[in-house]
Image (cartoon, rainbow, N blue to C red; front, side, top):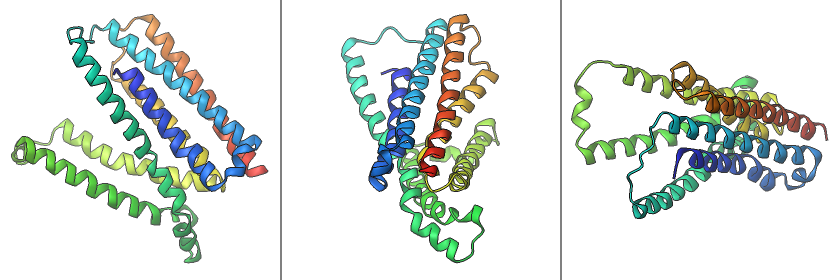
Length: 252
């Protein structure tokens, strides 16, 4: 279905189901306040920025001649449907991290009663989330290795960049979620609703920065880079609007 459309659908669903849907579930009246309206506007601006960045990536791939042209129409149609279904499921389920954080408020409150330091109160929720996440990913990983007969390769070879990269991601991803929880609590009672899309936005910006540093945009031409710059500018605007929406919700 293409990276541009896939990323747009995926990130759009994550933001809607991880921000607006929890707010409509737990604080429906708050959604119809200036802060709620600003949150919706900020998410719309963010999705618009994601569309621009996705199109920039598509133009980059076209410029670098990395798109295959020889697939049959029937295979493309089948792949599009499957890709769309996977993106829809992934977008909804990925928002579950923030649902867990918001649903876990009673656990956080108990941590406060037990005089846990303010920055660490969310750790009680994340310990449950990451434990479940670990088992799901581990079971699936072992299943794939057994299915493809690649389990034996774990004991071969040396520590490579791939191993180091996987180790870094294994630490960076939960580390980022933990920092998000600390920041969301510091933003006030409505921090989780705007803080989650802000975290997603920051990850998009960081990913594109890493891609630029690693030379992904070499030989892409001036147009894709200009489109990417425009998308980044829109995302920075969305970031500011998300912060302002939290300020409005906390003030009223």
